[in-house]
Length: 307
Image 1 (cartoon, one colour):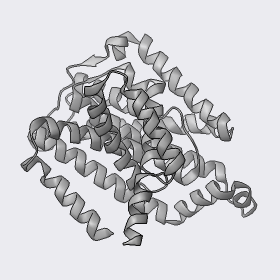
Image 2 (cartoon, helix red, strand yellow; image 1 turned 120 degrees about the vertical axis):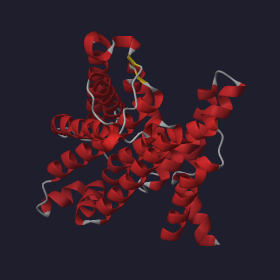
Image 3 (cartoon, one colour; image 1 turned 30 degrees about the vertical axis):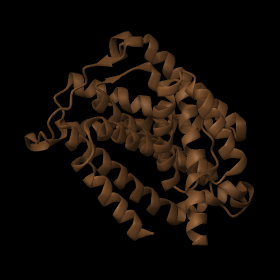
Image 4 (cartoon, rainbow, N blue to C red; image 1 turned 120 degrees about the horizontal axis):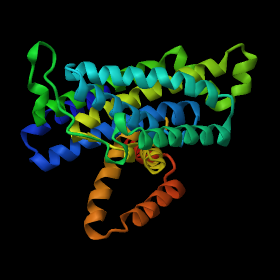
């Protein structure tokens, strides 16, 4: 498996050499969405904290990075890191409130906070641009005047590096004792409490980490697209990200990345045939839930085991 991952990373790194401009643009966006879906998997797949408001992390990261790049002469990588850190720090307070509840109540609280952030972004015209959003977000030169990130290929490689680094971080995290506690909370939180673990602190920590990585994805998106608007915070987008996690395979890290790519491909193909593409994708999602609840990654690993 590690050899396959290295091979996949090498192929992705070499993709700009063979892909046309449009395909490279779609692949860049798919990798950004894969990072977002993987960040949500830490909550959903490993801790069973189902969030209906993960778009808040994405939109917050996008707006923060966009505002910094528009108003301050900060190198692009520093703006992206600052946006991710800000999203993670802000998530600590949100998580402290949301973890007072469990189950569907937790999910509803995450949705409520996301919609609150959406309303703030919609009304705070001087900072967020309201419904028009922030436009013309630049890709400022990196440290020491590096201009490589201003190019399409250079920015793609930056996104790929961030995704790979985030995956390695998440893999180490879930394989560490911290990850074992998260899985224990997922399976039987009462037992973990009886063993002396402060499960609420662990849940706050995983929400903060998940939001930081989601904010990183949003911070990568705004300079990529050149804008950030309130659609990035809308509850419907949170639902789409959750679908990516479920279709890809929750609790696997790699599965949600594949789910994001699958979502992008199906959306592109179906939208060329009909404006009601979401209806057909909904049928595909129902098929996965009923026939392949383990998701794309589960199907691939099961087939590999048979072979």
